[in-house]
Length: 163
Image (tube, rainbow, N blue to C red; front, side, top):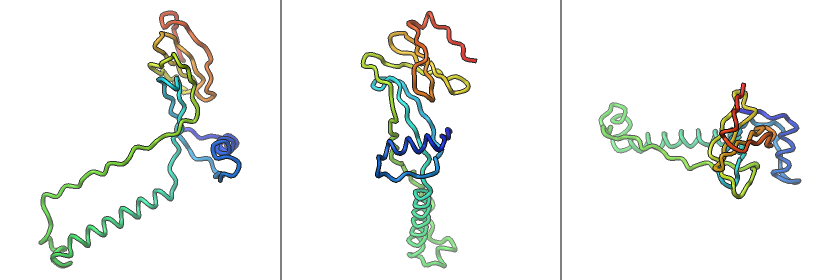
C-alpha cells in the first residue's frame, strides 16, 4: 500500500479530472501495480481504495435481501411455524455471488513497439525493478519515478544483485 503526498495527490487528480473536476482534499491510499508485456512494455496502474458510500450501499443491500428472504421463507407457514423450524428446507445451498471484474485505469506506461516484456524482478525495498524482454535485454527501472535507469544488452552479461 502506497500513500502519496498531498501535493502529488492534488497534481495527479487535477490532471486526471481537468480544471472543473472535483478533487478530494485527502489523498486515498492506493496500491501501485507494475506490469510488463506488449503495449505498454511497462504499465503503471493505481488501484485506489473504494469510498465509504459504496461500502454503505452494499451493507444496506445485504441487510435488505436477508430481511426479504426471512419474510418470504416464513410467510407460508406463519411466523410461529417458521421460528419452530417446521418449514425449513434441508438441502438449500447458497449460490455464490460472482462479482464483475474491476477495470484498473492505466496511469502511464512505457511503450515500445518491438519490445515484449517477459518478467519483472522487484527489489526488496520496492524502489527498483529489473524487467526482462523477449530480446534478452534487461532494463533496470525506478518504480516510483517511472524511468529506465540502466539497460544491459543480454541476460548473460547482466549479473544484477539487489541488496
